[in-house]
Amino acid sequence: MSLKIAVMHSKVKIGAKRGNLRRLGLELGNIMDNWSDIDLVVLPAYPITGPLIGYYPPNRAKQAMKNMAERISSKGTALGQSIVTISKWSEDYGINIIAGPILERAGPKLYSTVLHIAPDGSIEGKYRKITLTRKEVEAGLSPGRSVEVFNIRGKGQVGVYVDEDLTHPEIFRVMQIRGSNIIIGFMLPYESDYFRMTNYHDGRILTMELDPVIEFLSVRSRETGLPVILVGGGVEGVGHNNHNNVAFMPTIPSDPDVGVAKNRILDYDRLDSDPMIIELDTRYSRPRSINAIVAKSIVKELCMSRG
Image (cartoon, rainbow, N blue to C red; front, side):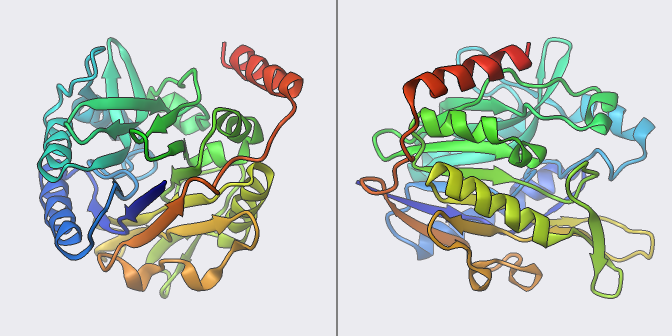
């Protein structure tokens, strides 16, 4: 069984929900016109609002998050207008879409959430980011409580992660235990305990030092025996020097046998160009076996550590 994935490597603009959706809708249409047999489209990181924490002043970020968060019903239907739009894309093109992180409101709580939307437009699954930074907690985000693996309706199993999750092997082991065929995550530059931010293009573009990120991706891929993809993109806004592009993260694939092949990375110059196409034979892309007793212990430990 094969799973054909198109990973979008695109720019978003901070806080510009309508403009971001308009741009991504056009790009999605172009993908569907030019590539056949796509089963799953992965939107770029933070596709609706861009990342707010660290990009707005702290007092503005907290209010902006409350204003921009959208609700998802317990029955798996979209309530927020942006999510309704993405659901309609899935239905119109008959494809699965993974989108995130998206700010989700659930009662008084806010989550950083990745959604899996099925070809009929229904919300098939959601993952609430588990590993939060200090700034995210201070801004009002709540941590998720469970690792999720999305079932692409008979095509394969996709594990998901966000940002700092990459540094926690137990999260990846649970995805391994639950039968993932591939693991896909999202990152844009952020203040991290593990990764340092840096600048390039004459100091105009904020990004992350890539060597530690690449090392973590390679290790997680070898540990699980699975392809591990990091989905990045660009962030448009007005920086300190009035430049339009203020932040960027490459889209990086890692393979369990060869690690990260640097010639396959989608860099800054590839923004808003062709997607990364991944054709996965799920008969052979299977997680490495893990002792049943160890597996039970890992899941129990993770559940206890998340309260």
